[in-house]
Amino acid sequence: MRTAHSVAAVRNAERELMDRLPEGALMQRAAAGLAAACAGLLREARGRVYGARVVLLVGSGDNGGDALYAGARLARRGAGVCAVLLVPGRTHQGGLGALLGAGGRVADDPFDVLAAADLVLDGITGIGGRGGLRPDAVPVARAARSGSAMVVAVDLPSGVEADSGEVAGEAVRADATVTFGTYKPGLLVDPARERAGALRLVDIGLGPYLPSVPALEALQHADVARLLPVPTGESDKYRRGVVGVVAGSARYPGAAVLAVAGALRGGAGAVRYVGPGVEAVLARFPETLVHEGSPSAAGRVQSWVVGPGLGDGSWATAAVADVLASDVPVLVDADGLRLLDVETLRGRSARAATATTLLTPHAGEAAALLGIPREDVEAGRLDAVRELAARYGATVLLKGSTTLVADPDAGVPVRVNPTGTPWLATAGSGDVLSGLAGSLLATGLPPRDAGSVAAYLHGLAARLAARGAPVAADDVAAWLPEAWRNVVG
Ligand SMILES: NC(=O)C1=CN([C@@H]2O[C@H](COP(=O)(O)OP(=O)(O)OC[C@H]3O[C@@H](n4cnc5c(N)ncnc54)[C@H](O)[C@@H]3O)[C@@H](O)[C@H]2O)[C@@H](O)CC1
Ligand SMILES: [K+]
Image 1 (cartoon, rainbow, N blue to C red):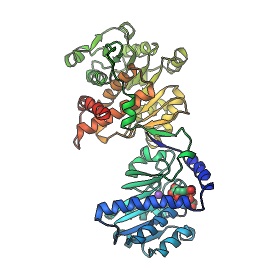
Image 2 (spheres, rainbow, N blue to C red):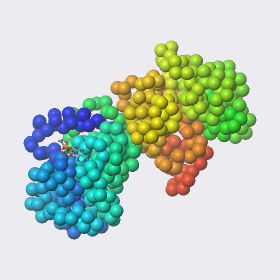
Image 3 (tube, protein in one colour):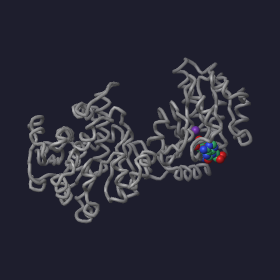
Image 4 (cartoon, rainbow, N blue to C red):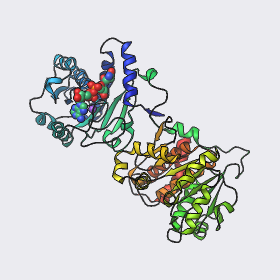
């Protein structure tokens, strides 16, 4: 599991650890890890560190100090290191002394040195930065990007908000980020995630002093493998769980087919389809159990998926209410999100512990649920998903390139999905995801696990299917078994 901690948690941990260490030791650990990572990148790019042209962008805090000490280490290995001091009167003095002592220098003209650089270290701001890059740093950050140099961010790309992943104004766009002690939420959540490039974590000994419950966590293969249901010799199709899918309409029969396609590959023993798309579903998946009346009359299920392509006719409205009245886990997606009655939804968890709910909005649907503009959700995704989960008393999966899953209990870490790919932004891919997550709910996974495991497999399937080319939602569904094998293999 990759975990990220808030700035406050990092600061507390640093204080505790620093009390036990000689002055400056922590910064030296950070700088040593940073220099080693940069040396590795330089060796990969040009064979050796000796003779490389390295430029340090140095702000007024300890983030600049890290860059200067790392620069000193690279200078001692023969790199030509030049510092651009953005606030000359407030440069980290120890770091500057170390750089000059190692043969580094201060740049006269930042744009000249940046144009010729092999590697740029961004030490403008780290966890102390607020509110995007200051105007004087913007042209320098742009120049760093416009040459052929690799840009390595120190701790965080300067200009991103560490706790929220928001980017207020301009931010550095890095090829790699070397972060210290723990990941910060902004490194894992878009839009900031996209500025960070490849992530590398340097252990500076903070671990024992960080809270055991992180702010954010990202599943990795081993975590997903542990959570995936494994049928035993005792399992029959009913013990493995039956997922009910209420989806599709005369206008959108394809949504029913895609949701069923996802559900058939999510581990449930059977899929029961209820809705107006019976013919289309059976034509494609004859193994589906079907029903054309109301969901509650369809037979037993261990979970419901309701909403994809449902439209908003009277049948759809009644079906959503019917499903929400059940005591099994319910996933509400797409049109279902518009049709749900908020009081009924909130009442579910009070009625029965088994009556859990997973809402799966994209940014536009989340914006409608929160009554705010879509851009606000996109800019502040972590806040939005937490707010939705708290307000609706349900687990919420907010779709996007870094899909987030939040429980209504604020003490539980939000999950962020690391396998997303822009190729997933394709019609119908959400229908596949809802079927898949609903199927995992039917096997007994709690909503946060079902949502995050589904997002993980879904993203991985899209990557495997795409391999650099566009994919259709149908391809994503078809590649889910391969993604599953990839995870457990
Ligand atoms: N505290 C510690 O023990 C350690 C800290 N480390 C480094 O120290 C960093 C935190 O250092 P600081 O607390 O000094 O904070 P930063 O260096 O992140 O930034 C704070 C400074 O930047 C200025 N600033 C704030 N917003 C700005 C903006 N938008 N544009 C330009 N300047 C802005 C502030 O006035 C302040 O002078 C970490 O990110 C990490 O790189 C590491 O050396 C590991 C150990
Ligand atoms: K930085």
